[in-house]
Each structure stands twice: as structure tokens, then as C-alpha cells.
Image 1 (cartoon, rainbow, N blue to C red):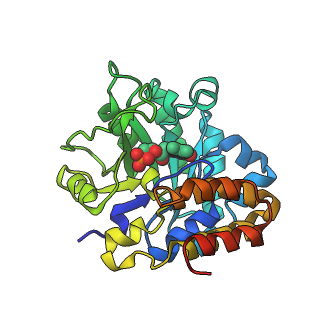
Image 2 (cartoon, helix red, strand yellow):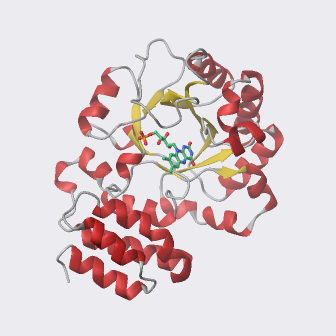
Length: 304
Ligand SMILES: Cc1cc2nc3c(=O)[nH]c(=O)nc-3n(C[C@H](O)[C@H](O)[C@H](O)COP(=O)(O)O)c2cc1C
């Protein structure tokens, strides 16, 4: 049997916002979900859009918030703000390969190259909050530097509670199949991430020594996947109703002008692979009115 705390919804920039997390919750009320990564600078400076991202964590159940940055004191301050806002745990991004984060900012995946700084950041965040602190990282910088196990020890020595391991290097980005090394003699639990798409995949990770699995792209257009993994009976009877609820939640959160263009990518994922989905997407892409889009959704899935 797979338990709630063995499957996590991945942090995904531009995706894991409050509306998306709410749709996941409709099908799996207790699985841990993680916010999109937030810069420690933005949190501490109190940027308006950033602050909105972490309102009301307390009311959202088990929500981890992911932060990125390269300055230990600022990371600690950001973590304190998020803990006060009700986050269940703080996740530190040590895997993002985007140049803006990983090279210029010296954060994200860059920290795989500087374990001393990684340790100082983890230690500062752990000392700043009473909630658990985790680290999300990759196998290593590139094929010649697959030193994830060393970073796990650094994380453990500095008080992190677990590490999520994306089974690719920074150099691989998101390409190629993820590789999941067997987990043996690690000082803290390791959560597997990368290409996990089904209950069997989760079971295989548990058998390989992981304490759980985190699902990223397989939840796009399929936010009920967590419910299905916990309980087969959980699949929705009509995807159109899920999509239109998702649209409504986004409108409530962002307002229609912002929500409609942002929602199009979700609709492309919800409709992918269905008959006439290309025509459907073209039609929706030409629409700005939320009521019109909602009607099209309900018609496309035959629930008008
Ligand atoms: C569009 C997109 C946005 C992402 N944003 C984040 C992020 O904010 N923080 C993070 O740690 N990883 C981020 N990731 C990486 C995912 O969390 C995950 O590690 C990766 O997609 C591999 O898992 P998967 O094969 O299940 O998708 C992102 C990935 C994608 C494709």
C-alpha cells in the first residue's frame, strides 16, 4: 500500500500555484505538495506577487514551500517568513539548471558545485525554523561529477530531514530517461524524482530503497494521478469538469485577464491525445472570454 507521505507533487514554476494545488487536493487531500520556487530576495523584499504566492498556507494542509538563493542569512530570513505564513516544511532548491538561477545567482544547481556553501545555507535555514527542511537536487553537475551522495551527507550533517533526488544531471536538463541509483546506507530518507508516472513506478522506487517518490510532468493534465496511485477508484468521471473547475479557481485567484492566457497550457495538457484536440486548442487560443472557454470545455468533453 502506498501512503500519503510517500507521494509528493513536484514544485513546478508557472504550474504549482494555489489553483493547481487545490485541484490536486480535490483527488488526494493529504498528499504533500510543493509551491513553485520562490527567490529568497523576493520574499524578504516582500514583492507583492511573491507574497500572494504564500498566503494562507495553514489552510492548505501539507504544503512545502520551495526557496532558492545563495545567501545563507537571506535564505534563513525567507524561511522564517514562510514558516510564519504556515508552510509545513521548507524545501531548498539545489537542482534548477536555468542559467539565471544556477550560474548568475549562484543558487539552484550551482550549489552542487559548492557543497560548503550548500551546507551553510542548509544549516542557516534549519536553525531559523522549527519545521522540517528538505533539499531537492540532482545526480550531479554533469556525468563526470555525480556526487549526489556527498551532498546528501552535507544535507544530513546540517540538519536537513530528507533529500529529493531528480535522477538527471544539471547538464542533462530534462532530457533523456531519469536514472534512479539504488539507495543504501544513506543518513536521511531519499525521495525519488524523474519520470515517475504510475503506482508501479512508485513501488519500484520504494523497492530500490527510496522513502517515497515525487511526480512532476506526469501530473500535468492529470492532477488526479495522486488519487489514482492511492486508490484506483479516484479517476474523474469527466475531465471537462476538472478543467472547468481549474479555470474557475485560476480566475478567482488571478482575475480573468491573467488567468485565461495562463490556463491555456493546462487545457492543452488536459486535452492532449484526445480526438480533435488540436482543433480544440486552436479554437481556445483565439478566445479571451472565460464563459466562452468554459462552454467550449464542457462541449469538448460532452458535459454541456
Ligand atoms: C516547467 C517546469 C518547471 C519546473 N519548476 C521547478 C521548480 O520551481 N523547482 C524545482 O525544484 N524543480 C522544478 N522543475 C523540475 C521538476 O520539479 C522535476 O524535478 C522534473 O520535472 C523531473 O521530474 P518529472 O520527470 O516527474 O517531471 C520544473 C520542471 C518543469 C518541466
